[in-house]
Length: 570
Image (cartoon, rainbow, N blue to C red; front, side, top):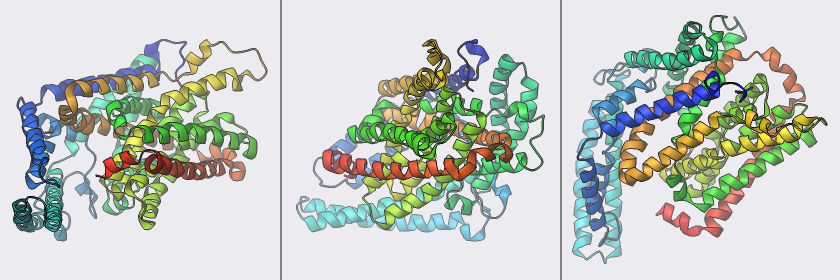
């Protein structure tokens, strides 16, 4: 499986994954950078000066500091007219409760449920906000008049300011909800369909000469993708964390194992093509500068724990469980220990795993990711674990990046930041692990007592799309450095990546999960579950992963580098 290095770059899925991924990133970069208003640099400088001056005297962040910070946070590329268009083009369905049609269009003045009248609630919040602003202003004035030397007055001022910030956030969330619900998503989804159908259709034409066969089947797959997002955006499903990935696989499985996947759809069932392109886009989200914010603790958790868990789990599968297929064993081990689907695809290509083995590994990952993203943060809250430690534990153990962010956000902003950063650091290992798996299977596993395979076989096995992933990470890390922290936040965090490529990646993963379901037949997978070995392997490996990651996180953040923990907390 995977593209062979023996054929032309332009005839492989890996090659076209890089072409499409980089074309999307390059186009997004040009469009977002050129659409930034001319005064943004000057405004960033102005707000930075205010925050610097307000941080000199007071022992807490003042109202002016927070006002400047909030104004600076509004300097986002996705706030421009062009940014809003691209954000809507790649956006998901709206949240809904009873009527699924509201997933595609809701009028801000006539919402789905009368009790959710956002406009009335917004007016009440604005009134409450004004009162909290005046109270915070008075408390800060009293603390300032005392020269910030009265601890009691300082504490009262700080609490009053935090109450105002909380009210401000609630108001902003309501406004955001109203604005998001006030447009028709259908035309944008049609535009997104045309864009993706053309990009992947051209690739399929060059590789297989099948543009129209792909296009016809892609209509069906894209509709199932929309259905998956629609079901996941239902408020009850959203609340329990039953996401689009699970729905996409379930819908595909129901079709393939009942009526069967139609023959005219199969030319568009391109699981790896979609995932590989999504992973190239993921590279733009892994920025070296952000990795360094967590520093050595995060690197130790991701780069020491992960390989040990991977090797140990693989050893357990071979020596203790006696799993017959080494390719299935290593694919499940990588899926569980590194970062779920992304690692599974890369490693499966490197070891030449069968498609049904990859499907099985991804299915296990989806099931346990859905469970862990709900159970783990609840358990952390229940035992009152520190937010930084909890975030590190989540980032090192839950597979999917989106699930990591959601679980971390449940604990708080600090936990979310730590969790997402550790997951980013862990994602860097995708290419490294794939490379060493290619070496191991070339030099040892696939020899079978025969003559040594040529070294060039490593290159043939190595998944080339990983080069696109690494290249995107390097290029965007450099671009972020050139733009600087402020404009990087504006153009990349809330522009090229935040409002465009990351949403596109989500769509590609959704289409891949639909394809997995459509290509999976339980009768073909049944022999892999003999004795429940794959399930035992995953459960045992994940249990070890949970224990070892927690231990390493505690040692790194509290015994070796406590100053970094203090910096994050404060």
